[in-house]
Image: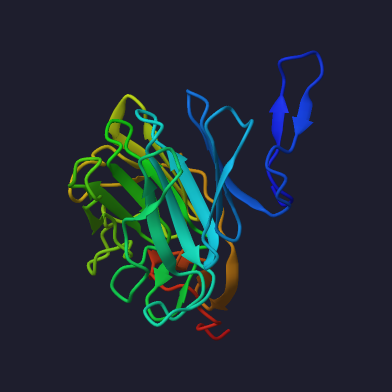
Length: 287
């Protein structure tokens, strides 16, 4: 919420609302474990963790961070992760809101260790290369339900990290991009490795870590082989479509060309129904 974190106790006849952290800044994310641990991230790079159902909180600060998202493992509540977007541009990431880093804790959020570099031209899930970064808009992180050493982080694209070390040894692992930016192959066929840009939520089927759902600016996507090196995805919008158009041009012979927000350009008419793969068209057809 915009002015902090609230706890609502509904055990009595009347709900009791309290502010256990008393930090008046936008809260980005919260996760709660079955054994009473609470992890809260605030705008500005502040992480608060409680081990006693919110009676006391421990603070960790990352002053160079803008937005942070966080998650607690369902199989071991001492394992926590945080995905952080940088407040300012750096030499390696020349735009604001690029990747500051992905961090992991194996002691319940007391100490945090970096498991990724800061964003670079070749590694940044929040980046449109050479254009901008969007880590304050699209920033999602999730843990595989059957492996607390395996996570996926989403922004513009999806990256998966898998741990190669064994706790409590120094943490090591590897990163791989697991989707692509191009919705169509050059021949016009759909690309099954594509997930729409701007990922906001990644949710696993708790019974099967191969099944995952990704919520994006372009709707829902589903994978049935999310553990594979190159997962396949399908649009899961159930025929629901909503599109914002910037501009359109109408020509003779029932031809209309329109450019949409993040959903390509569309050529329609009596003999056309094509997707041209651009982001915006400004009246290219003259009336």
